[in-house]
Structures are given as structure tokens and as C-alpha cells.
Amino acid sequence: MQVLMTPLSAYAALFFSAFTSATILPGSSEAVLLGFLATGIGDPVILLTVAVIGNLLGSILTYWMGRYASEFRDRRWFPVSPAQYDRAQAWYEKYGRWSLLMAWVPIVGDPLTVVAGAMRTKIALVILLVGLGKTGRYLAVAGSYAVWAG
Image (cartoon, rainbow, N blue to C red):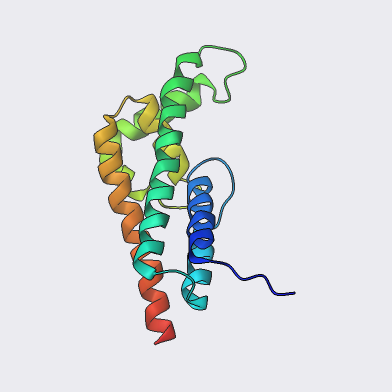
């Protein structure tokens, strides 16, 4: 029995994958996006938009987690030592808010948004910079597929 995926369910699956990819949960939204592009499920523009919005909302959640979790940094159970916290703060102060353009990079992207929250970076700036970076990444993924698929 073959199960057919509708465009609406594809958009929902991509949104979920993109959202979780921008949090501490694992996700592979690029692979999901490529799968839907390759199978022709859904409109490519809508797929890109859904991926960007889902991933950006996941980053915003991660930002707020950093913003509120930092209130507890003096607690013994806090997952980051005071030395690690100070190093992260120094790094962010040195490289600044522009590093948020790299929030799409695996492994370092999520910590960047956590640190932005902990450092109380204005949310509008976070949305702008993280959104630009993530949009560029998804455009590159879709563009490389379009070139490959010819």
C-alpha cells in the first residue's frame, strides 16, 4: 500500500523538521527540503518559505531559552560553568551581533542564538540577522538542487 503525501502534510513535516533543527533537538531540514523538491511535492517557493519560517521560529525559541536560562547561571545545576559562560560572553562581545548571520551553521548556530539571548541582544536584530542567514542557506540548498536537477 502506497501512502501519498499531500502538499499540506509536506509543508507541516518540513516546518516541524526546520523548527526542531534550530533547537537542541535533532533535525535535518535540508534533507527534508531536498526530498520534497526532488519528488515535486509542494510548491518550491512555499517550501522555502515554510523552511525559513520554521527554522527562524526555532531559533527564536532558542534565543528565549538563553535569555531566561541565564537568570539561573549562579545555580549549581546550570549546564555551563562560570568560566564557560564568561568565555561565551567575551567571544560574543568580540565578534558581535554579526555572528548571528552564521546561526545556520551546524553545531555552532544554536549556541549563538542562546548566547544572543543571554546577552540580551534586541530580538528584532536577532530576527533580522538570523533570518537573513537562514534564508541564504535554504536558497543555496534549493539552488544547488535546481542546478543538479537541471
